[in-house]
Image 1 (cartoon, rainbow, N blue to C red):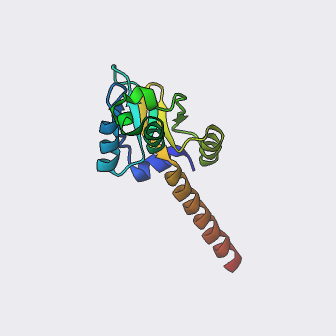
Image 2 (image 1 turned 30 degrees about the vertical axis):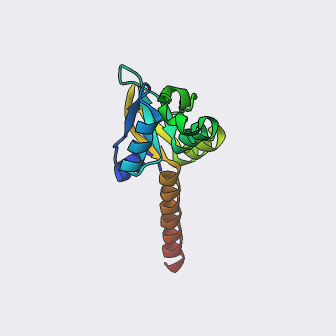
Image 3 (image 1 turned 120 degrees about the horizontal axis):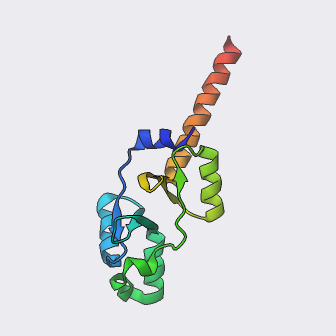
Length: 142
């Protein structure tokens, strides 16, 4: 399975936030949309990073409630890890594991096509395994 198939199933909606926004705004957006990460965009609207719940918690641990008044740019994960639409499920799993990220924006050049979470990867892997099991059972029966 490739990433494009995951995006077709889950959709291509991506919630973004400006790198100049405050962390309290990011926290409200995460909560309101029921998501675990936002793609951070620069002033030109280009994706530059991912801000996760974990990043916000880290700021709170370091700065207390005042951390919520800090800009997103101060808390976002600096290494921007992306994948292409034709990346395989296995490649994505290795990327997420090696880079220790749970959300990967899917890019086609400078265009963001969607975002895939570790939960999306696990769901797709389970679907692949179930399909393979069904095929093997059908083969054995015939």
